[in-house]
Image 1 (cartoon, rainbow, N blue to C red):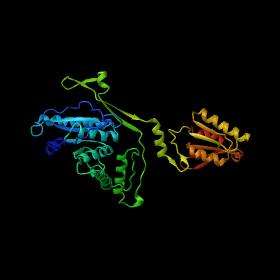
Image 2 (cartoon, rainbow, N blue to C red):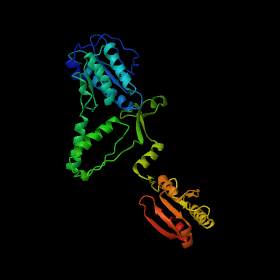
Image 3 (cartoon, one colour):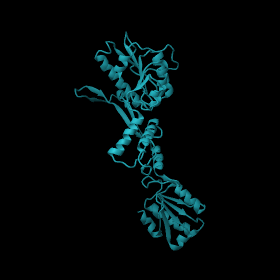
Image 4 (tube, one colour):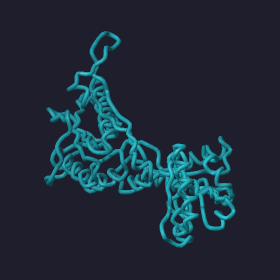
Length: 368
């Protein structure tokens, strides 16, 4: 990619306007010397997308190093200047403006995310300076104009290949689409896959929603260098450890579970994560016999280590049933005057709605 830019753009410059509010150069930015060819790169060196920006910048710098070691481009050295756009569209536009108008770069590399490439691409197109994105797959990026290019596949092509693989290789007749609603890339790819896969009959299609619950973060040597965390290389040399982390948002897991397990009436908690496994529904709190039966059931279940919710509110039965379905406790034990007279409680499974009656002395055993 570096060689292509240099070979085609010897002597290509920018405009003469100065940039306002320009971002600071990223670490390792170079100042052009002599008749060197200066290439600009803008990326998310910090922020939530830093793992992409940093890895891309490392790759570009490696390519520049290899190119210069081979003699550069027609004897001219290639140098690189990188600016951090912090993963923000406004900063991306500002970074490209500064690269072109202030640094006078011959070409621009970036960004990874399509939304940031669109912001920077509009500036590059305006000034007539070529820009190449390494991995922005949204078709809108290169639709900006004839100065914006990419070296990766488009979202429509990726979606078509995925659908083709699912249909022809996996022989799939149904597909569940799990995607991140917070990521434009994920949503776009979902749409293109769905469009390609929908060639099969409607009755055999299935779409599902997804939620992001975790992140992978790349730290590089930010923490390992000050901690002097090193390992011995093949030749005994000291190598600083590259670090990263994987985090799961505990609070997001709750939303993810509810998203995956609910119906029109409310939550359907899986027993393994339910705040309460059983809800005792007292249909007549002012009836001593009913309340006594509910209290005994509560005590027996708690004695077995079972989490129990006792609904003894003074409300109509319909309101209580609606609330219990909304809360989503896996099991409901319903106790009313008729049941007490018969010596039985009614059990309801929240997930299926299935009901059965059991003698009071067998209820606790059922959950043992």
